[in-house]
Every structure is written in C-alpha cells, then in structure tokens.
Image (cartoon, rainbow, N blue to C red; front, side):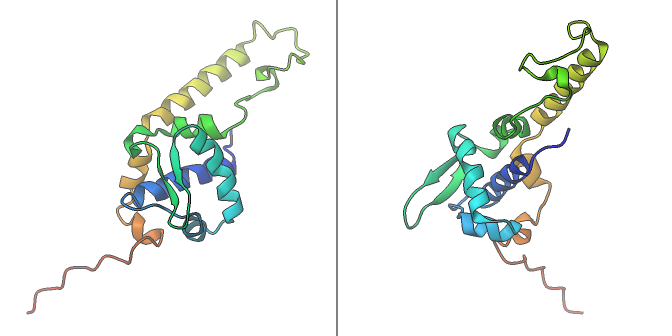
Amino acid sequence: MRLTKQTNYAVRILMYCAANKDHLSRIPEIAKAYGVSELFLFKILQPLNKAGLVETVRGRNGGVRLGRAPEKISLFDVVKVTEDSFAMAECFEDDGDVDCPLIDSCGLNSALRKALNAFFAVLAEYSIDDLVKARPQINFLLGIEDMPRLAAAPAA
C-alpha cells in the first residue's frame, strides 16, 4: 500500500501546527517550509478542517491551528480522512464488479484484510505529538525559529 501525497502533506501540516503551537500557522509559511504549492495545501486543509483536525481562522491575521491536542490526533485519524480507498486487491472494491468464484471464501482476501487491520492498528498507536517530539529541532528545521544557541563553553 502506498499513501497519497495528500496524506503525506496532511501529516506535515499537522506537524507544523503542533511545532508552532503558540501561534497561528500560515499556509505560505508551511508551503515554504516543505517546498510545496500553497494551492495544494489549501486543498488538503478542507478535509482536515471538516474532520476537526485543524481549525482555520480567517482574516488578515488568520491562519491554521490544530483542532485538538496533538497527542489526540493519531496517524490513523489523518489517513482515514485523506485516503480515498483502502482496496488492496480487486476483491476489496465495493462496486460489485469482481469476476472471481472465490470472492466469499478466498484466503487472500482474509490475509489482506488482516494485514490492513494491523496497518491501521499501528497507525493508531502514533500521534502527531509523537512525531514532533521525535525531532527536538523541528522548529529550526521548519524555519519556525532560529537555530538554538549552544551554551558557551567555559573559559579555560
């Protein structure tokens, strides 16, 4: 299974907002940090906003912030909002157009469903907060703040 760019950047938007927790994040700043178009990010914001993962504030001083605490947003929450299909094989499709006599008793279908459920379970174990805390210098890496200064070495 391969996640879409939409999911990838949705997670990145949420990580940026979590790292910039005391301020509203602006789409031009996020786009610059990740080297992606603002239009693409605006498109991704719609399902995130609808699901309550982000809140948008309109106006001249507007921006984006997390809709709930970063430890309350799992990767599974993001994936289920941004991915259109989890069909790993033709027999997962709901369109009824499957030409297989084993559709109701296939071992492959059962194995793939089990694998998909395990994938979802692992995603549910990780939060946006986990991803941000795993990178102590994330604010510097995203251009949110300058490189932290190291403590001056004691004079010898």
